[in-house]
Amino acid sequence: MNANAMPELRGYLRSDGRKGIRNVVLVAYLVECAHHVARQIVNRADHPDVQLIGFPGCYPNDYALKLMKRLCTHPNVAGVLLVSLGCEGFNRDALNAEIAATGRPVKNLIIQQSGGTRTTIDEGTRWIQEARKQVAGIAPVPMALDELVVATICGGSDGTSGISANPAVGHCFDRLVAAGATCIFEETGELIGCEQIMAERAVTPELGEEIQACVDKAARYYTTMGYGSFAPGNADGGLSTIEEKSLGAYMKSGASPISGIIKPGDFAPAGGGLYLMDVVPDGEVRFGFPNISDNAEIVEMIASGAHMTLFTTGRGSVVGSAISPVIKVCANPDTYERMTEDMDINAGRILHGEASPDEVGQEIYMQVIDIARGQATKSEDLGHQEFILTYKHFDALGPACLPRR
Image (tube, rainbow, N blue to C red):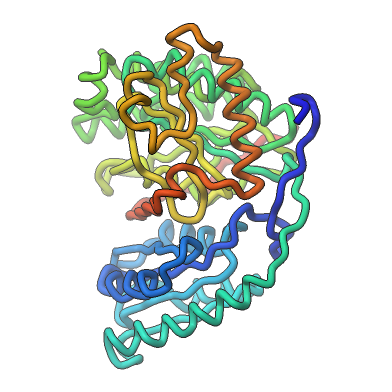
């Protein structure tokens, strides 16, 4: 394909006009007590397009309900089976109604009313078989690059991340933004020290002030918690400070203007652009570490519409995700050699002088196109479908966060 030509992707058209690059049926548990039953239904289905998600908490939470609504109506999702114990606080009726309004097949199984574990597993298995037959009839349609939402995250960073994989992803993001796609970067707790640089890239001065404020919030949050987003593995890999880690993480954002700030479950406005996701809860510190694993942040970006995630790693990571594919971009050539079976892109070639960040960025860009046309990532081939959702609280976005352009 000509690198300058506008590629045609393949998507599944949903009732809201969005298109998905996958056609997944979800089994979603609504409390930890229903997790085992939901997992057994997925295991019985034994198909990569039947995937498990869920919220473990019993106490209701507006953030969790919002994210489950967004996830269950994500364009990559074709149908949903909800599995409830029956006495938890989760608003299962509101979630069911949200999904049903989109025309997707949906059913809510309540274990306490269905007769128990075996009965519910049997009923759920039958429903999944029928739902899969129904969604199999959804034919893919052409999809443009400007309909695509791509996210990025670091995981297992080391001293090579900020000079190979992360800048390569930044070059890929610049290409995607120029083509009209929407790109999301996050980790405000790992952007401490970069707030002024990001503010200067904001499309309005008011947005620049909001960017500085959300990084300041992250710094206060981590200070109150007594630790920051800097793991022992980062130090073992050669990083010395959070500022050094932040500069490397920042490189993933590329050089495009920053069009706005979103919070988990918020959608970026139509028209594409580069958006910073603020993942640190608002208000008093009351929910512990803002994201207890990389997958928590991946889930939040999926809830904001991400079709796929570019995951950079120097130390090595094996995680994928339910709903949306994960593309692994390996920063360290030694890690790539050890973990080739899990890595999609070898950005460590930059360190050996075999490729430039721009050339690897082009390789990542082409991989994005291939994945959006149905090619499987390494994590998909290996069956990785990690998922985690915890308690949080967010205030509504202010008008300066999504300025008119």
